Image (cartoon, one colour):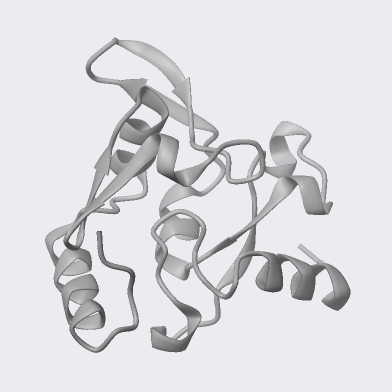
Length: 136
């Protein structure tokens, strides 16, 4: 997807260089964070500021063209957390390096993006130890 540099810069600055799903900082990543189509192009999502979020490589790859998943608690189809229209704090709570989902949207986002994979939690703990990742 060809996203103009000016739009890429806007997405990066708006997110303050952090993945808008897992909060991973660009400065601690081996790969560039990238604009993620919240609603993917194949689902008629537009390439504009309102439909783009900054995502680390892992979150973006795990999300892929998905727009949601089945919430195991409600057994309902639930859309993912949308950083443009929803507040991170309303859907997630940071507990040390563990990201606790608070809502069905939070649960499906954490599950499909594998946000609490043990290796990702360990990485966040190391980043917290050196002040590069937020703490509770």
